[in-house]
Image 1 (cartoon, helix red, strand yellow):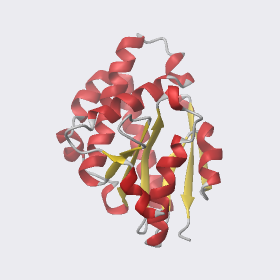
Image 2 (cartoon, one colour; image 1 turned 30 degrees about the vertical axis):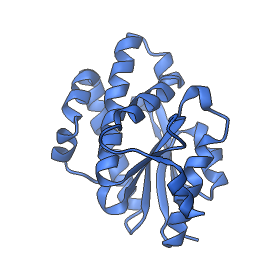
Image 3 (cartoon, one colour; image 1 turned 120 degrees about the horizontal axis):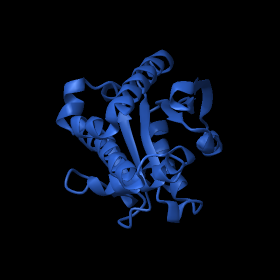
Length: 205
């Protein structure tokens, strides 16, 4: 099963920006962005910058896949020893541009969220594991099984190497991850972001 990774489209540094655009479209459709009072075009530009940053980091230190060259969705994976990168590594991959577009409040929120996520990641997965950094499906392809096509091969490879897997999830994706054996280790309400996240861990099989 893990050899099915060869059947996925793997991004490299020459085409990784395509992943950011797909993820931005997916995130823009969730309520906390579509209902925002901010200018939609500016919000989309900011999301593209932010998603590009996460995928550039992932292709440099881990791996990023799409189901096919049509890029119906994207999944970014990082090994455990690469998730806690230095601020200088983020800056080198475009963090300053993303932070600039976020505005003062957005920058504060990004830093607070990053600190919380990093601290909790270390608390619940302070051992060798794989980190699912980002998973997003293009809105026009959602509900057609593309998330499963992205998850199954990598989870099979992770099982082959007897590794756990860790992620942070919004509520809407809990059923998907629970289907693949992830369990909730903590639910965090983030009133300052008007948001909630669920921390999930999948034990090695």
